[in-house]
Length: 171
Image 1 (spheres, rainbow, N blue to C red):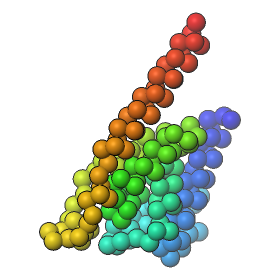
Image 2: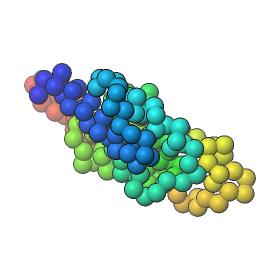
Image 3: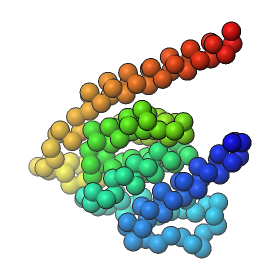
C-alpha cells in the first residue's frame, strides 16, 4: 500500500473513531464539515464534554482507546487518553495500550506509542471530583508500575527485533 493510501485509510479509521465517541455523547456527526477536517472537528467537539463528566459509562472505554491509538497527531491523542485516565484509571488505560503494542498492526503500535506518552499526564482535582481532597478514588485504578515494566520489556524487545532485521537486511 502506498503511503498516500495508508494515510487516507488511517484518516478514515480516525474519523470512524471520533464519530463513535461523538455518537456516544449524542453530539452528531458534523456532516456539514468537509471530509478532510471532520475527524479533527469531531475530536475538538467531544473534548470538553468528555472532561466535564465526573464519570463515563463502560461503553466509552474501547472507543476512547481506539480513537487515541488512531489519532494521527501526537499533539492531540491526549484528547482521548486523558478522559479515559480520569474515568477508568491509569492502570486500565496503560494495559489497553500495552495490548495494542503487543498485538496491533504497525499503525496501531505506532499509535499506542504516541498515546503511551499521554498516559503519563498528571491527574488534577479540578478535572475530576474523585481527585479532590476527600474524593473517593481507589488508588489501585492508577497503580501501574507492573504495566510500565511490561511495556518497557515489550517495546525493548520490538526495538531489538527491528534492529536485528535491519542488520540482516544490510548484510
